[in-house]
Image (cartoon, rainbow over all chains, first blue to last red; front, top):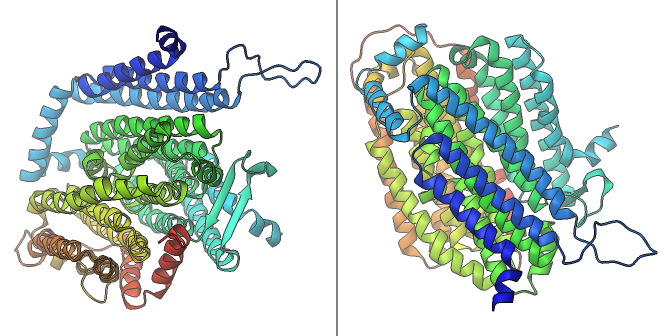
Amino acid sequence: MISSTVGIWNYWIVFCLMMIGLFLVIGRKNFLKKIVGLTIFQTSVFLLYITFGKIKGGTPPILNESINTIYSNPLPHVLILTAIVVGVATTALGLSLVLRINSEYGSIEEDDVSAQDLVDYHDDIETGKKLDLKFKK
Amino acid sequence: MIDILIKNLPIIVVLCPLMTSLLVVLIPNIFFSWVLTTLSTFLTFLFSILLYQEIQIHSHISYALGKWMPPIGIEYIIDKVAIIPVIIISGISFIATIFAYKIMPEEIEKKSISKVYSLWLLAIAGLLGLVTTGDAFNLFVFLEISSLASVALVAMGAHKDRQALVAAYNYLIIGAVGATLYVIGVGLLYGITGTLNMADLTNRISDLNNNRALIAGFGFMIIGIMVKAAVFPLHIWLPRAYAYAPSAVSVLLAATATKASLYILARILFSIFENSENLINNTLLFVILPLSLLAMFAGTIMAIYEKDIKRLLAHSSVAQIGYITLAFAIGTKASMAAGFIHMFNHAIIKGGLFIAITSIGFYIKKRVTINNLSGLGREMPITFFCFVICSLSLAGLPLTAGFISKLYLIKASISSDDIWIAILILISSALSVVYLWKIIEVMWMHDGRKIAIKENPTIYVSLIIITFLNIYFGLDASLVVNGSFDAADKLIGDLK
């Protein structure tokens, strides 16, 4: 029982990180913290892939006919290199959006921003004036 | 020369917009960057037409990228199914690019226009790659290329209205969670099969009937793609993203973005997992079918109460996606064909409606809401006329493209003994007339302020093209219908 629990230790870590990340994305009202959560969520997936590829006692995948050894699967590592690049791009875009939101709304709390959005929306529906000014600028 | 071109068509279709997007960013001039973008999208459209002709001869083209043979290397597959979204995406993006010429400088800072065109091409390349690739992980990369580019495009609407930023942010977060879920699913499948190639995956899955990792992986993949395709309860990013994006971007995204993901959904359900019949049948019956029925009504009712016209159209998109997934959920050959017919027709209908509404916004220089549309129909007859035809097409009146898709959808649901589904489809279409009539009534019957508007040919030319398509495919739908039935044949094959 204990040995099997320890044996899949990595998967427990993956599971915990995944839930922490997803909770932050859903539960936090702060735009910056959501992005932190998203990054943790994505990192847990990286760990999941790396764990698939690892064999106990496996060496780096070097083809050598003189020594016949087991080696770890290199493909998940390569896939994760790609996924890391995608993750960095997502984080960068998200952070730049948060910066712009902060400069336009003066806040990065979801409640403040959506309250202001609601006012904007009703202005649009009732008068449409606000946009008129913006166009002229 | 031509021979090499034909042989490499599957990758050229993706590379053409991808490479030009790198070039466009170097051209600071607004006009020339637009010309290059138009040229690139036109060439892409031309290549996809060539590809269509090739498909008629060979019916299945497999392209090994860099001569690394599948299943080890990355494979690009074009068959009778994949050609439908390829044609939709490349065709609509060409029309949307023509539309962008006049309207883009109005809404976006002059200095960033060429960068926007670069993102625009990148989004198109991502969508095309998404539908042509035959590798499950490569699909994720293209999914992220297209969605990151579209998020940035939506955020460009901030110059006009700051709400675009929040819309783009939500789109980014929800989309990234969806894509990550998809990667988890692919990882689980890779863990038990050791392959990423879709065709190979199909073969290896067939031995593992009730493997729990397989079922979990399937669930993760489906949910991830359903987020991207905006299937009903996962659609919340869509209305705002479409409503606050710059006009031309709304047209491009509304007509193409969800179609690509819907195609991937069909592909996962009916191609990758075709051997796990129990799993698929349960998913269709207990997940996709109820959600699509809910989407049809929820989307339509949201649209009826909406006052901002761009948001209204976006809510109506949610309902229309419901029709397409409903067609998949019925799961017979006829209904799959109906799904693909509606996928094509919805692209031209929604493209037309968005072009009409955003060009009205261009003339009145305001956000288009129900209150400031009064009497505008008489001021701009051409735009209004095209808008009415596209609306009729959406509601499904005869002689328009929308009628054909409703006809086949209802025929398919009756032939599979689900008359109640056919009745629900009819009720939902009748309800869609309510929100469309609301707009038409205000535009034509009400008296508004008199503002003289001179319609600009560079704006309405793309509207006329797309309206013509709506009528043409309503009168002679044989091209779409035959293509869709071929696709359904290929997907479902002799299973059912």
